Image 1 (cartoon, rainbow, N blue to C red):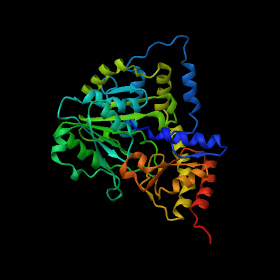
Image 2 (image 1 turned 90 degrees about the vertical axis):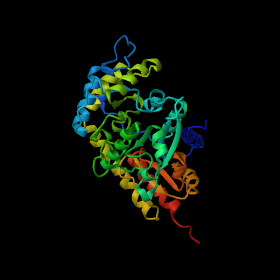
Image 3 (image 1 turned 90 degrees about the horizontal axis):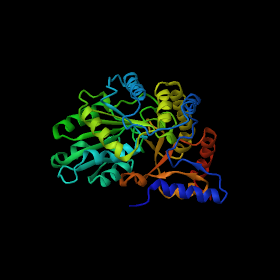
Image 4 (image 1 turned 180 degrees about the horizontal axis):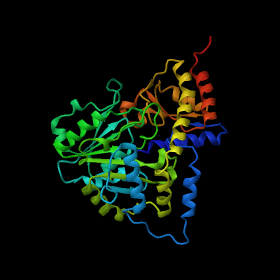
Length: 373
C-alpha cells in the first residue's frame, strides 16, 4: 500500500523543524485546542487502582449519554441498549465496517465512497474483501455525489455506500433531501448507508443535519466522535448508531479485535457528550481563525470553495504554490492527497493557534503577491 498521505506531511514537518524553520502546520486535522478541564478532570477521577478489560458493548452510562445527545441535537430517539455501541474513536470502526457487512465471496461486495475524501473508506473496503468504487465530488454539484450517473447494476452490487458531511476535505454540507434519496436507494437495493459525521458540531453559519434524521433509519449506520467536537483526538472515543441488527453484529465482532475504549475514557466521554458550552467555544475559535485567513486568500484571487462547516478551508490553488509555502514554514495538504478529484485544490486545516493564523496570513500575502520587476 502507498504511504498514508499524512505520514508524508509529518515527515516534511519534522524536516523543517530540524532545519530550524518555524512551522505553522495546516496539514493534519488534529485540533490544538485544549480539552476542556472538566473532561480531563473526569478522566483523572476515574483512574482507579486497577483497570479491567472494557466490554465491547460499552458502559450503560455512556450509551445513555449518547442517546440523550442525539435526541437534543437531532431530535432523534435511539435505544441506548440496541442502537448504540461506543467505539475507539471513529476511524477503527469505519475501517472495520466492511469486515462486518461485506461478504467477499458475493457479487454484492461493492463499497462506494466519495472522493476527494478520507482514505480509510477505501482501505477498509480492501481489507474487508470489498471492491471499492469512487464517486467524484465536484464543485458544479456543490461537492455532493451525482447519483444520476451511477448505473443500476452498480446499485445492485453495492453493499455499503459511504458519505461524509460536513465533508472532509471540502467543507461542503449535505441537505436532508440527499440523505432521504440515499435511504430510498439503500432500501431498494439493500445496502448500508454509512455516514461519517465527525464534523457535524463544527460549523460557521448553521448546524448541519444528520443521516439519523431521515424518515427510515433501517439501512443507516452513523459514525460520530469526540475527536473534533471536543478536541479529544488522543482519547479515541466515538460511537456507532445503527439499527439493532447492525449493532448486534458489531457487538459480536468487536470483542475479537479488542477496540473498546478504556473505562476511564468512557466516563470522561459521558461528561463531554453532556456539555455544549465547550463546543460553542471551539466553534467560535475556528470561526475566528477562518476570518483571519480568508482575506489573504481572496485578495489574491484564490477561491475558497464550499468550506461551510468542519475545520477546513478548501482552496482552489495551483499546486506549485505548495512547496513555496513549505519553504516559508507553512504546511498544507495538496488536494490530490484525498483523491484525483482533489487536484487543483489545497486543504488548510484550521488547527494552528489564532496568533499562528495571523502570522500565516502575512506570509500568504508575501508568497501570493506578484513579483515586482
